[in-house]
Length: 205
Image (tube, rainbow, N blue to C red; front, side, top):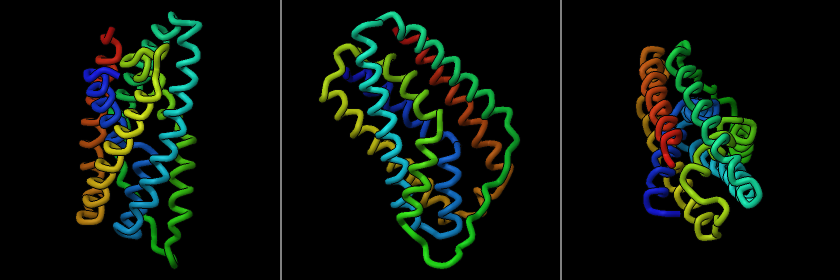
């Protein structure tokens, strides 16, 4: 993976993680209810789920690239179009405050891990993200173990760093995430960011 590919992947993945979605809503909601101690198990569950999609996308697309090189032009445009659709949905969606998860008895780290893993594995945006981004930044016909390892490290560093910021913010300023006005602003900023990512993917040769 070239250095410019690393940068594009890092920026695009950062945008995907920052953007509100079911996984992030669950992550923040649990912290609003249980506090910062709920963050590690959830973050690990999201990471494992992302690794599953990343591995499937990398291995599956690499095999396809060997036989059907032209298919990735279609994949790239479909991926960019889907990201634009997500951007529009994010911009126009009704803002709702996140609900706090009530603290009922002892917190189970195992259940938090499994719940976030299942949310990530059932989220089609994750696999579409990898299908759209990977073909645009790496030659999947020559996708090496080193490239795969670089992706693993990037995903870990970016995901845990961003989730840590959300965790601290949710724990320290719980009222912010319950404000519809604040969520509306976050949705629109995220929508613009996703649209920019779609443009980068579509125009990248």
